Length: 112
Length: 114
Image 1 (tube, rainbow over the protein chains, first blue to last red):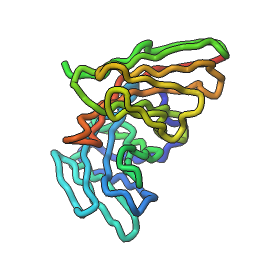
Image 2 (image 1 turned 90 degrees about the horizontal axis):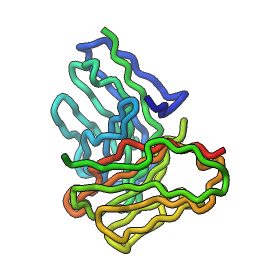
Image 3 (image 1 turned 30 degrees about the horizontal axis):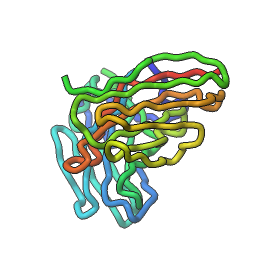
């Protein structure tokens, strides 16, 4: 598959454990925050988003937490599965609401 | 099947030889965008389009052109490619009025400029 990053921070978790992927964002004016998942050889895939007027949002097996005080975003994956192995990107819309600004990504490795 | 398609998937070319990477979506999305992905730099936006005949620069537009003559197509044009444009390129689209940031990405185009 395509290499998306040679020196990405990596989180290694055992199958069945919970995963927490963290992201620090930069722009206080951002009002949308989004998580994308990119599997090897594929394009990014939308996971979940959260607006700045919320602190927490839950999806299927995933939860996003937003702490605006310290400009921190996290993605929690419950009962991590081998299929969750991928690079995860956070993104924010910044001051220009027509654009997305992506972080550099975190690689999640799930081992049996 | 709802999808974003890109062609070609792989391209090796030489400096200065004009090329076009095509992007097409079948979801009637008004918003389309091009990104490049480089190791350690994540995804950076090149150009985006809010609708037909409306295009705007992203963060790294230098050396690229785009056009949006039809809603479904958003080609990326490199008039005179240079080695620093060697990268992995992604096209994306979204139904901006409803879900602006739920972008659907194509499979990527690996471009090498020698």
